Length: 393
Image (cartoon, rainbow, N blue to C red; front, side, top):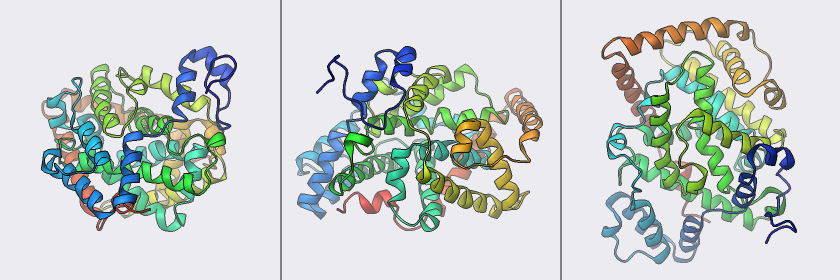
């Protein structure tokens, strides 16, 4: 179906389309199509889970860990998904996969935590459609700490050296996250989700937003405190996350070829400029997120600040990253730390330049990051939401 001028129909959530067309041309039509597309392979697997039950779920899990060849009797949809994720595209660098996302791993843990909460998840939650889905998943005061920990665990597993190799934890968890998206789509649709207004639940545009929330968005926040990436570092970051996008079932047209912040910002502008302002659901999620994140930061061994101090710093860096308009819409207040950010950024930039110049210093920062991420993976006990819910209606 298309409109009278040949363009795809626009869900009610899409705003500012005329201005967006001026900047992005036909990419707006691609966006409108992606708002109505889920993930056919993963959606078929969830339908197969509901039809066949435990045998289908067990076949998928065995195939993810041991490989497709180990489950020759896998149901058709499970087999098709395993075939897709096991087919490594030619643009994937085996050497980089073995090394992990060392650009992200080199970020000190406390800055990584701030960038994750104040950058990545804040941007995710600023989308009214995403917030609407997430608020419906449970009590925020209970789910926010667990959601923060589980999402951080997945990101850690996916970025560790060898984490995306077939059967490795990052590979398995990334496909499980993809199936959780499919489960959310099925559940929301069954419970009357208004696709004409909001688009398909967790559609391709939403997954592209998530992809940016682990590439451009956190490093935009980090740049504001002195952690600038060179052109080479940017290329390594995005090329690594191309493969994450592939495993998440993201349409290649939305990410392949993006290997620097400039091109990533073009996609981000297309997504953000056509999205409505954050709403009450967004504000509730961000408030719960910040309470959980600052409690974690204050509880870390050797923390230099209490939760109030971390909260003020989080407010300052989030406002700097997302801008005053979005921050106000999200209810993020002004912070006494804001005037200090230039001094903080200058000190961090100097320290980062020093690490680049001292032989072995950046390598040591990466190894410290690897140790911290492994510790984060170990913190979450029991099964995760994406492990619990992919097989349950």
